[in-house]
Length: 201
Image (tube, rainbow, N blue to C red; front, side, top):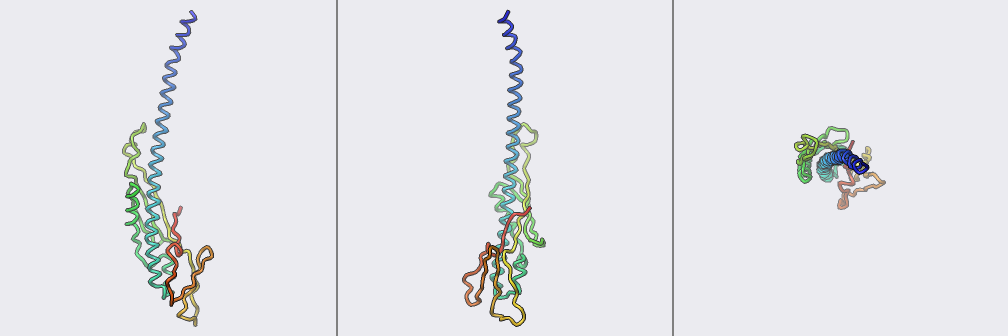
């Protein structure tokens, strides 16, 4: 009688065991689906960040070139440091960076912002993939990023009667000053000295 009772317990426990194992497997697949979606979103965000920064860096370099071309005319410095005077064509660079990150982007230039920059929305080329969640095999992640170009330097424009052959001193962040000699312009600030490019919230 005791042996029959034990067999009866084992028979009752087996369906419970199957149910528990099935639930654990379902939970594991659910975690896998969440992980796939998170990885896909991270890929989209990485692509958006890289593309926005690339676009802004491209325009930063153009602004620096414009400043160098007009270095002997300080009346133009303020507009250039404020991000004016060049076309904002960095979206072409954003497209290149997005392709390298296996994504496509929609890029908008915003020179009219108080701190000019770019807004980028990226979409992954790869879908989330097959999972227990219906429709993920056709789902692509979309994320956005904004990068801005902010001046790192300031200057005081010479007052009336100042020597026109003396250029204003650039006072930049971290306590760095640039005293520019119009007779020797070999040592000039680099793009990263003049402008800070960073992601904005």
